[in-house]
Image 1 (cartoon, rainbow, N blue to C red):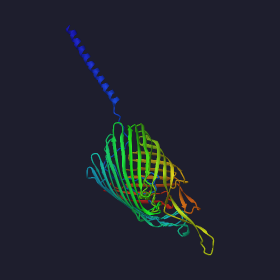
Image 2 (cartoon, rainbow, N blue to C red; image 1 turned 45 degrees about the vertical axis):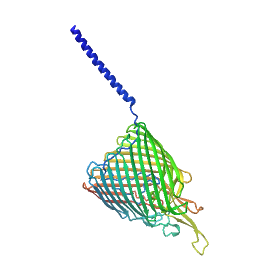
Image 3 (cartoon, rainbow, N blue to C red; image 1 turned 120 degrees about the vertical axis):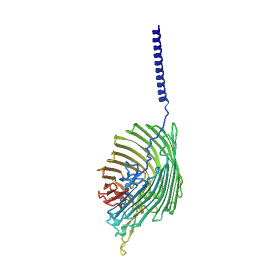
Image 4 (cartoon, rainbow, N blue to C red; image 1 turned 90 degrees about the vertical axis):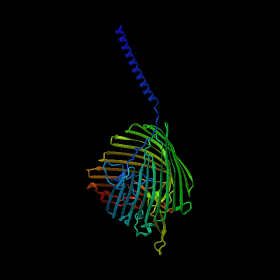
Length: 590
């Protein structure tokens, strides 16, 4: 009997333990299923990895930007005869200590002195103070198409002070800068020579021009905010511009950005105002010189839906423009982008539609084409729609690629051209025969046309740590004009090959090859009976190489070879660049 009772007790205890385990398992399963069913939907837009390290100065290499013709972009053709050299850049924190600054001095052919100085103070834990100064100039001559040898000096001077302070969640940046650039109007189109005085009229030939711009930029951004954190930031810019021919410009921009996420959608808003005021411009509506004032008010609201795998941005771009000499207008474009990542970090697909309204204030145009008529006032133009799509991903862990197609519709796009005048004169007073005389201008005017632009772009990058970096990119363009025969001065294609290689621990080399497709330039005669003249501009292949050798841990020698393909091409009609030119020197870090 006792034995049976003991057996019953053990059976009952086992049954209770089993029941408890079963109930607990059921509870665990129920909880796990409940979490999966009611998990919060967390929308997030694709965002770049944010870096908040204190920057330092390293003696590194400079890469040219990709060529993309636009009234605001910097084309592969630099403003002056030689590609600007950036001896050092501010980048993320390196693996080893490199000191407080860098000094580089050098010289090259075409009577070219060069000097650049960087300094930063990183004693403070959360802030950095820095200085940057640079001088690069040339005093050489160039040979034009007509055989004339002309003086084509230029100079590029920069001075900058920057302060950056990192708060717990935000970063405040302050930049104060001054640039002073000088050059000559040294060129003119055609195959005439200066002694042929009846064949050339170049009112600014040999004249000196200078561009001086000083400005301040204050920026506050919450770089630590995550996708689900609200944030607010702003950006303020002010520039004062003046040149030797008497144009003076004030330009300011203030932009606020807001982000307010929720469980289902995230709301973003960029809004602000922009103002420009330029004196001594020729205004076609007045047929006289006057001051042009523009005030822009803009807002770019958008909502973000989705997650890191699939997401959608849906918004609008809005502009209200007030111009002292042209009618007030209101512009609106969609701002929609779809992203889909079927395989994370391997392939992504994107598509969208947007547009842009371009504020063609004086200094922006002048820095793009310094050889414009100094009194030229360029009207704003409007990108009504831009449809784009493509995909990006990886061929391998170290090889990335991107393919993209864009189709843009522009209203009133500006195109640069040169004008000429054909008259008939009697060279011999004793003769009644008349001969035509064509006089060419050597500063650019502008005309406007509506345009559709189709762009095919592809890029491949390959990296092997710090040993090897390769970039290959190419774009093909197709233009459809409303009235003009061609998209003047715009290329049929452009391509870039950039390669850098760490030969040894002390020796680094790099090369850049730029190819620019054929373009057509335009000469317009003021005499309607004389018509127009089209100048074909041949394909450009610009070869560049550079190297740095570390003599000691503090002292390095550098050399730059520019245009060593000896191609004598024109970046703007009538204005050839320097042929093969080199720059070499010593850099010292401290």
